[in-house]
Image (cartoon, rainbow, N blue to C red; front, side, top):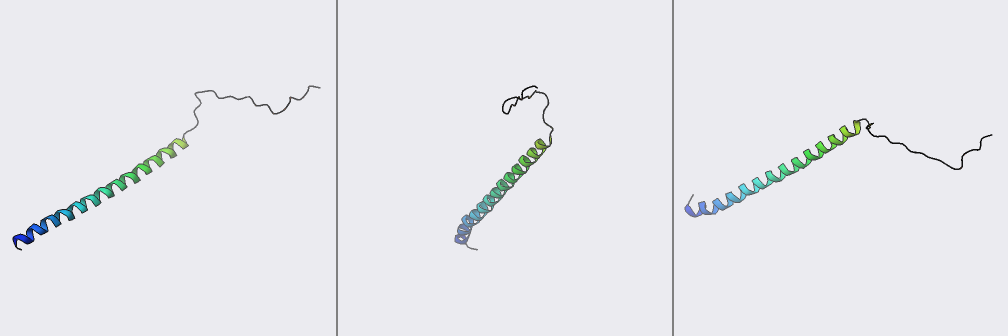
Length: 71
């Protein structure tokens, strides 16, 4: 390989290496996004499986129409 061939192939090799590195970073980002979605789904499933909190008191009075008269 002559000197001119080496100078041409060095930038090309650098560009190929940078493209490969960028592709790996993009793949890693996609994997991290998928992992975050999985963890979020697991957290929602665990939260849905918990019993309702009984620490507070929830009460409601509901009336529909007039009360019946006592006979």
